[in-house]
Image (cartoon, one colour):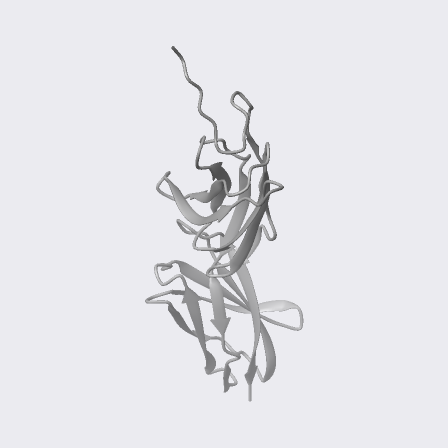
Length: 194
């Protein structure tokens, strides 16, 4: 004797489908992303798990939600790393198509001031703290590259002395390469030398 069980409110033998969309597909580390979607056939209270494929190749739960009477769900999640994101219906294991999520390092950088030809001290605070890549800083003046310097992020902080060959404003581009859980990003700021 074969018995088929279905989630409450869903007819036995009905094929369940799950959709998923993200309100943003690129976000800084620690930012909030809203994941929403639908489950069909609709059943109120069906638990849905939002998961991300992490750098180790494991699906980790980011948030949970329950469907309303129309089968709609929504959940906010904190962006802790890049990777495909999917929704999984807990009762049956039905999966949504994967959605790409790009997470970049969160960077807060000062506007360095220095002396002509002596350089200016640049400090950037970077999250996640595990990010320890080498960052390239390009210095431009009058549309030309006039200097370069590199430095490694340690304990969430990048400290470098940027070249200032002259007086006035210099335009800086900080290139943060990708690492295990975050994508590459360029950050722009200015320096001033007197």
